[in-house]
Length: 418
Ligand SMILES: *Cc1c(COP(=O)(O)O)cnc(C)c1O
Image (cartoon, rainbow, N blue to C red):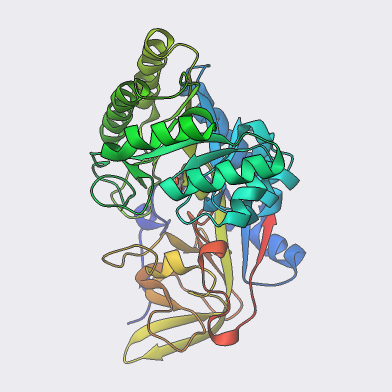
């Protein structure tokens, strides 16, 4: 039995939280367009589409809970599409880049260099030179970088602007990917920071403050608040050894979005309250210091979909396979191979049959000759045929740029901002 007729209570086979895109006359709307018309406009599948209105709304929601004095940065490695970075540059206070390639995109997009910061382990000398010449803030992550920045500064006749990226002595609890605490390649261990600060002072670099980023994809407001609190306390202690007053304290981000059944959207209200208390304390305990939070996934992840077309429908020993023209090579995260420990399905739907009453259990696979190329493993989906459009939600972050597009030589995907 392939088809199971279902009652109205199960009429929408999509993850309950995926309510950001309207459904109209059976079709999902992205950027206000019915999906099949959008696909015609794009001219090919597969593609990613990012919805401008949702991006704007999300930034407004974050702004609404942040104290006015706290700056909001976009960490563009979550989605470096130039048009999207251009839109975000006009909405947020600054852009965080993780390479000279990203720096170019941010500057092309019109980001103010004063509000651009550059983090990442293993910054090459050429990248450091580009960053100094661009007068952006460099988050120093090793003793070697201090030496290089001094030499580059005297060569260019500029003082490098630096903040110190601290590897704290605590972790962000409940985080999908930990980026601080214990031994880490990111930042400099807190124990070594006084010596690093001393070197920065003697090298004559322009010290602006501290950067702490504990982890990513966290859905627990209490854990995020705790990490921000501890980061603040740590910065207060470290400031005593700083060569200049702290003007900037980047408390990181790590705000997550729901991907899997049972996950709920993050509650921003307690985070806003917590930051309000910290901003107030900063006013007296770190006078002149601006607080910054940097968000990637949270700002863009829910605003994007990945769309692929079904090119074959096969049944193998009773199991339905919908074979799509896109998969792992465009969307590694949705295949479960980008940081997941146990593979779970991303929210997936048949976007041109979004209110279909007849559903079946089907797996969506891509065209690659590997069992890893799986977009949906035995999900309840509308009964789909060749030509229908598969949609993967929550695809605005760590999608196209985080996928091995050259693997197996299939065509690349397109990205559109709508
Ligand atoms: C990746 C990264 C971010 C963004 O993380 P999200 O989980 O996407 O918000 C922020 N800051 C730094 C330093 C990063 O490396």
